[in-house]
Length: 101
Image (tube, rainbow, N blue to C red; front, side, top):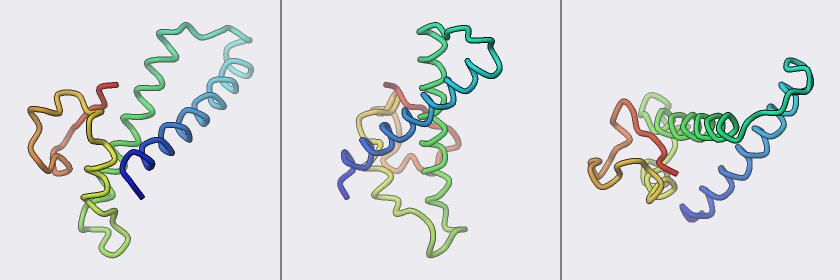
């Protein structure tokens, strides 16, 4: 799997899940009030950052044979991180990295 293909699958699946969550929230909790573009954008960035954080955590050796390949995670998120030029070569060991889409 290439990093770009994996990133594409992540973006599509997270976006579809967010659309479903927003619809449920709008219909059930918000009396059919529409979300603003800003709200949707913020929720999307939050969802993608959450997925990035999960990928980083799953590279930890604690998970042994079930851990994600560190190189695969680095390749997946290449060129979409905020301040990527100033990050170390292996940023998966940092406490917080953010998507900069």
